[in-house]
Amino acid sequence: MSSASWPPVRVGTALVVCAASLLVACGPAVADGPHGIDDARSVRSGPATGSRLHQPGVQFLPRPGVPSPPAVTALSWAVTDAQSGRILAAKDAHRRLPPASTLKTLFALTVLPKFPQQAAHTVTDAELAGILPGSALVGIKEDVRYSVADLWRGVFLSSGSDAVRTLAAMNGGWEKTVADMGAVARRLGANDTTVRSADGFDSEGQFSSAFDLSVFGRAGLANPDFARLASTKTAKFPESGGTRAFGIQNTNRLLVGSHGVVPYPGLIGVKNGYTSQAGNTLVAAAKRNGRTLLVTVMNPQTSSDNAVYEETRTLLDWGFSAAPRAAGVGTLPATGPIELDGDTHSAVRKSQPAALLNKPAKADAAHGMALAGERDAQRRTVYVWSLSAVGASALAGAGLWWRRRKQRNTPPAPLI
Image (cartoon, rainbow, N blue to C red; front, top):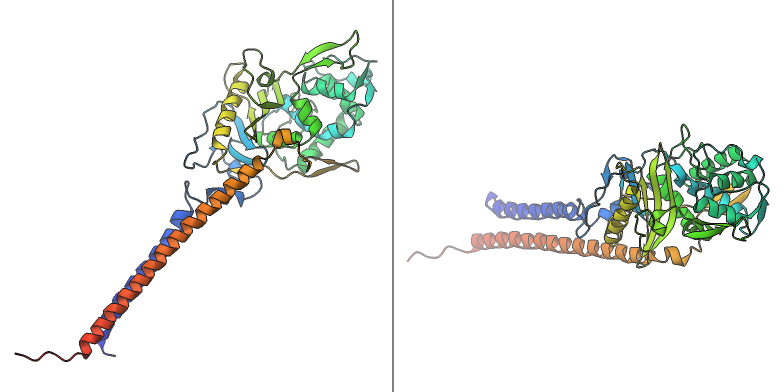
C-alpha cells in the first residue's frame, strides 16, 4: 500500500478514538455528582453507620426537588426513616453528649422484656435508696404493691428515678443494670454510649449521641409494650386506683401539648429529658401517610424552655417533606436478638406493630426501583448515543477510504 492511502485511515481512526473518548467521559458525568442518579446507591452501599456521619457539621445530600434541612440550634440532631433506618440528614450525629432521661430508652430496651406487665411487686426502702437530689419522681411509696406496668408508666410518663430504681433492683441491682445497659448498647451497634447511671442522671463519663439514641428509639418502637408506653399521654398511678392513686401526665410536651407547646400531629412518643449538663434532649417519632420518622435533638442553644420541642417539630416537618426523594447520609445498624443472662430478647421483632411502622418500606422500595429505572434509562441513552457516534465515525472513515481508493483506480479523463 502506498503512503497516499494512509491519510483517510488516520482520519477515520481519529474519529473513532474521539467517539470512544466521548463514551468514557459521559458515563461518570451522568452517574456521579451531588445531584447524580447514583447518590442514593452510593450511600446504601457504604458502611452500616455511614462514613459521612462521622464528619463534622450538617450532613445532607442535595437532590432535585428535596429542600435543604432547616437551620436549628441543637448541638447534635438526626432525622431517620424509622422503617428503613435511613438517616435523611444529621448534624454531628456521633458527637458524645450527656443524654439526660433519653437514656431511659436504653434502660427500657434492657429491662422491659424481662418481667410480665401484669406481674406485681411490693417496693422496699432499700430499692428506693440512692436516688440523687433533683431527680424526677413519680411518687412510689415503700411497702405498696405496684404492677410492673405501673412502674413502667412511672418511667415513661413521669421519668421517675424511683421507678427506675425499683425495676433495676428487680433486675439484680443498680450496678448490674448499668452493666446490662452497656452490653445492650454494644450489641445494638451504639458505640458512642457509656452508661454510668441507669436513669440518665448527670454522671461523670456518661455519654450518648444522636445516632445512638436514634438506634434505641427505633428498636424500642418495634416492641409493642415500649411503643404503647411511649405514646401514653395520661394514666392513673397506680392503675388499680384506691385512696393513694393519683393522675400522671407524660412530660413530653410535643406529645400532650402543654407549657405553650402545640402537640405535633401523628406523634407517637418516644422520650424527653433534661439535666443541667445535658440541657434539653428529645427522641420523638411521628407517623404520617404510612411513614414513621424518628428525630433526635440534643441540647438546643437557646434560652427557650420549648426549643427542643419546636426544633424537633421543624425537623419532622422537613423530614416528611424530604423523605420521598431524599438520599440518605447513612443508615442505622440492623438490630437483632439481645442475649443477656441466658435469655434472648428481640430488639426489633419481625412482627413489627403495623400501627407504628406500617409499610413505608413499600414507598422506599418503590422509590429505590424508580431510582434504579432512572439510572438504567439514562445509562442506556448515553451508551446508545455513544455507540451511534462510534458507528457513524467508523462509517465516515470507511467512506473516505473507499472514495480515495476509487479515485486512485479511476483513469484520468482525456484532455480535450
